[in-house]
Length: 196
Image (cartoon, rainbow, N blue to C red):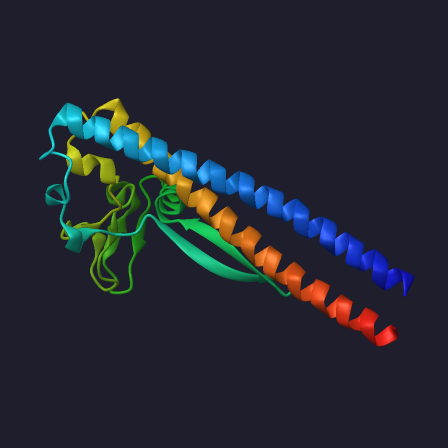
């Protein structure tokens, strides 16, 4: 009985600790979104309202820079961010550093020069060789859709929204922990009532 009461107390303390973290992260998310939208409106004012609009990019060519992965960690569900851009750059940089001027064969037997492929030079089709130069699939920084020399406000806006993605995933993970703690607390409470 004492052990169940101790576990109930520990679970309740953990719950309030995570709840406090959740409120802090939600306040942080609000600040990031507010600063992101303010910087975005300032850049629209500086560049012109017609310059920073959805008309500046092609939605068909858009590709997600960030994806989420759902993992099970000791029976608990955890969300993890997979950053497409940095992962591809890292693997391409590593292969470029390790294999300079090395010629590899693809599935068709075509010769692929690693130096020519470069960063982000992954073919669009698996059967298409990268040496053709046709339709090379690379991840482009979305800020470049609005020109090369964009205002600093637009860059700050982008970094605020990128940070907001991380905070959103942290909030989702904290909410999942809260749900798990609620379930644990209810089970312990039911066990205590049975013993009484």
